[in-house]
Image (cartoon, rainbow, N blue to C red; front, side, top):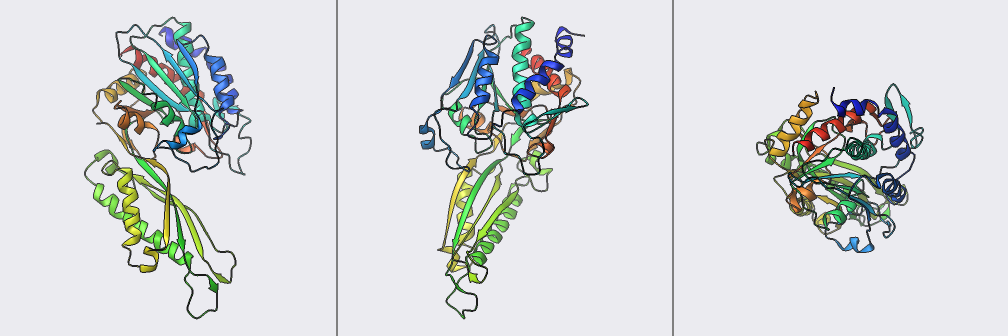
Length: 408
């Protein structure tokens, strides 16, 4: 047994306490500051740089600013920026994960009162992504306790607002960090995702002519127009998927690699009145053969070309969350190194495409740093009423990262 394995076997209680402390903080977007303060205190002395990265109202002027949750204010919700320097002989690796969580549903019992059953911790954010935070904190603690000096530097961005569009990562990458590789820490069950779809969130308003339900003419239902617009989006989505086939084989294994989701539809003021306005909100995935700008333009065109002359001139679209896909080749050096680290720690290491979106694209596309999505935890339980993570998986993830980083 290696020193690292022996050390990690003794960390179950510490990891449990750390994760439970973080889960007890209801850090929905707008309330991330207590997590930042906790990390600043917990990481003091474990790295060469541990600092709060302020985010001001200026972030709203950034062209990549996303705002599906409006009314958020800035100035007292920093990112946490960490640098651990190595010997200077190896590669520099960036890590990104997030401090915010999605709100619990009304049915979620004890979302912020974590509990353990048979080595599993339950609670909001356990796997998305406070388990990832704990993995990175434990990594830094291990390096300090075992006096391990890595060949290269590591830099960690603990960010706000990932769940509402990635504005914390916008702020982090605008500092223009450098690096050779990046790992976007999200639950993956140790699967390595070098190709991650993007997304465009939309809010579509359609306009009609209100009137009495018994009126013979002179009325136009905004609700019916909204339904027509949704049908136009469905046809466009089918064409988009068909046109992507054969270009990126990792995505081709999925029937629907970039879903179209209509999550909300609202209309009207009275049951017996033809509605004047209707609004529907949703998202559409963005595959690597299109940019987010192309998708936004094509959604407009899908409505204008649907054959309804009234609808073509009586609608608006507001785009809120806008991510491109993040893509590196499945045989990229970063992927090979992650596969090797997984395998060295006894983990079978699938490589796949991710059909959700993440903050990875800012590192890959805008900074030119090859990035993968990877981490402990099961994405299938994230955001659910039974969100959880296996404690042993966090410890295994730390072992994988130590192995990976020592090989840099």
